[in-house]
Image (cartoon, rainbow, N blue to C red; front, side, top):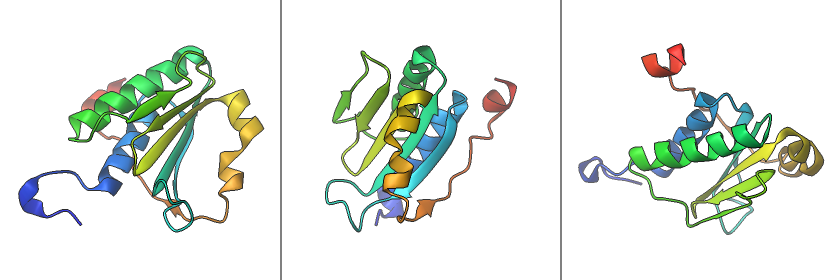
Amino acid sequence: MTHPANHEPDLLSLVRCAAAAADDKKASETLIIDVGDVFAVSDYFVITSGANSRQVHAIVDEVEEQVRKSGGPSPVRVEGIDEREWVLMDYGPFVVHVFNQEQREFYQLERLWGDRPRVSWEPNLTPEAETA
């Protein structure tokens, strides 16, 4: 647990920030899955999708920028950015999966992890987000 004195964001805040950043770029069906009890490598998955490769790329850029602005790290690695069909952003304790819609329907990660709890999150409600 993060102590208030060190001003570093806690893990769940960063995960929710990633989901909200995807939403800012009009991502579809963004959800957070708690996989910590059954997946040794990460605690949370953020799963989202874009309508086309350009939107997938915009979502990836926004997630990276907003997590960094919130005091979080850059991803340890990013895979699939060239193809823009399924981009995996590995932050260590959480992973952001940005799909194009066709790949998301094919892989159905949310079904694979369907027995795991979902984590609630709220979209950014800043004036910038409301007018965008």
